[in-house]
Length: 86
Image (cartoon, rainbow, N blue to C red; front, side):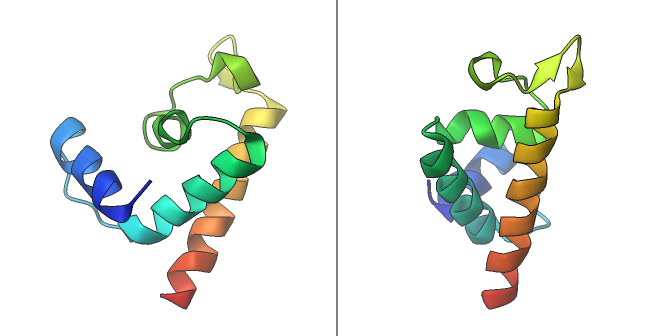
């Protein structure tokens, strides 16, 4: 996933102007996707839209599971690490 793809998704699909570093976000998502062996787009949707990912059990009855919270928090930490190095 590239920063341009993230930026396009936020602008075109969500209708917002990105306020964060799209490149740092793309790096964080790509790293996490490799670690989890899961689709990058689904992780992006989880983080930005709170869409459940059934295959990795991120939600239960509409609420985040412990696994879902862990994934989101790890994504945020990695984002801030990449953002601070840019």
